[in-house]
Structure formats: structure tokens, C-alpha cells
Length: 376
Image (cartoon, rainbow, N blue to C red; front, side, top):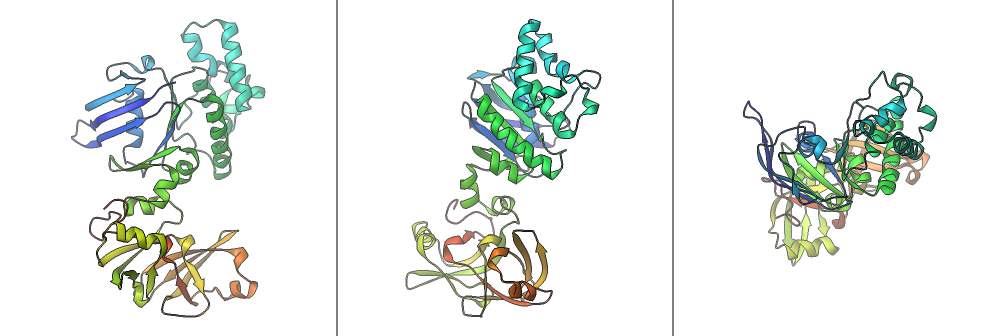
């Protein structure tokens, strides 16, 4: 097992394009860390630099306290699972898993024990004599994971291993990776563009944009205390609603006035604003769709909207609303909370009233996008 440390790591290509900027991160022994971000943000490049598949331009990478900048991939004691499986089509499943062990000239009885143990853990014992073309996508991915497992490497790297699978298989394999992590108890670094994978798998999440780390934290930290509007909108589905409004301080109490409403920022959130000494003025107010509430009657704390789209998602509805000034908002409503009569009223053009409480609000600088409380 091993820790991984990246210090001031930078990647610049020959065309002078910088893919990764001054990347600093320390990954603890046996920790599961997920790199997440949109396509082209540098997450796979960073993983490949750790693996030794990409040269670094500046900085140092340490594995278990040893600088590995100049070590070949085979000498770094890492195992990697790729997005495209990278299986040998002419070999059986058994031979694919055993391949790296035979390169190490390991005794065949030891190879047999390692391969069969891995196959049992992954539930692919019955496929050991098959060729990859006879397997489904999920089965092929298990073979690729098994090939990495048998090496007993210090660090386990996974580059978008589930992106080629359909939604049902992705959910199944995600659960299996969680179980696998518990059995292997090793250091994992996992790359994905899917924030659901990041939230469910990671001990910590590294959120990247344009080669820069935007925030590092536990799933709950990045969800509840996003450092900026990019993190706030990237984590959570549907994404957080962003509203341009004003923050007022009246008689020691904070209020916001979105679309003419007056909503107090009370409780813990109000105290946090005071502790951070946030000044009244223009703000970008963030509220997640699941924290917006439908109201039966208008009041000074409600926002009038019209319904544009009603998405039925099974256990919940996603209501796409538009305000008088053409701001678009999304509200998530559990279907169990709605009567049949109320549901029937949710048609195109319906006039609705929404509100939210102070404890679910997030406040961002409208110019820099930084969180005014947690990352001023």
C-alpha cells in the first residue's frame, strides 16, 4: 500500500498548450480519491502522469515517499484499468488476467491461485475459458479489473472504467467497485466525468476545470460547502439554480429579495454570514432544485413562476419554471408529496409559486464566483 503526492505538477504540450497547472495533492495510504470534471479538464492527463504514461513538464510525483518522475510505468508498482478495457482478443479471460504475471515469470501454480481468486471475487469464474468477444461490456470490464487486481500493486488507477457501459450496468459496476475496494484495501485513484460516480465512490473528490483544482473535499463537503459557482453547479443533479439578487442587512438580520420576494436568511446560515462579515449588496444566490418548495398561495416570501416543462422521473418530478424576467429555475418535487389533483394541475403555462428557506441558500460573489462564506 502507498501514499501518492503531487507537488507543483505541470503539463505543457509541444504546441504550448498547458493541460495541467501547478497541481498539488497528497493522497493518503488506502484512500479512494476521485478526479472529476468536464471533458478536457486535465484529469486523465494527471492520472497518466502518475502512471508514467505521460511525462511531466514540471514538479514531482512521489509514490510511497519515492520520487518516480524518471521511473518507467512498470517500475512504479501501479495497476491501471482503462476506459476501453484493452484486452487481448486472441487470449482467453484466464490468459488475459495471467498475462502480466507470466511476464514476471511467476510460477504457474501461483498464477492459477491469483487468477482464480480474482475471478471468484469478480464473479467471472465461469468465463475464464472464453475469449473477450464472447463477453458483455460489464464482463469485459471485470476482466480488465481482474488483470489489474492480480498484480497486488501499491496504487490502483482507474480511467473512466464505466463510461462505455449502459446506465444499468454502470450502477451495478459502481456497487461492485465499492465492494472491490473493501476487499483490496489499497490506494485508489479514479477518473470520471460523472459526478454521481464521484459522490458515491470517493473518500475525497478533486474537482478540476481547465487543468486547475477548483476544490478538494469529501462528497458532503463539496456538496454542502462549494467553494465557487462552478463546483456548486457541477455537483448535484439537476444543477444548482443561480439567481441574481441583493443581500440586505436590516436590524441585524439578513434578507434576500429574489424577483421582489423577501426571504430571511435565518438560523445557522444567517450566523455564518455574520461570522464571515458578509456585506450587503449584489450576490449570486444558489439554491438546489430539491430545496425549492411549491406553495399553494402567494405571499411576500414566494416567487411567481410559469411552468414550461414537467419531467416525470418516477419517484420525483423535475419542474422547469420561468420567472417574469425570463430566469429559468428547476424544482425537484417528490411525487409522493403530490395528490393526483395537484399533479394534474402541473401543465404547460401553469402559474406556480415557489420559495425556499434560509438554511439551504448559498451566496457567491457575482464577479468572481467565490463562495462568500466558505471561500471568501
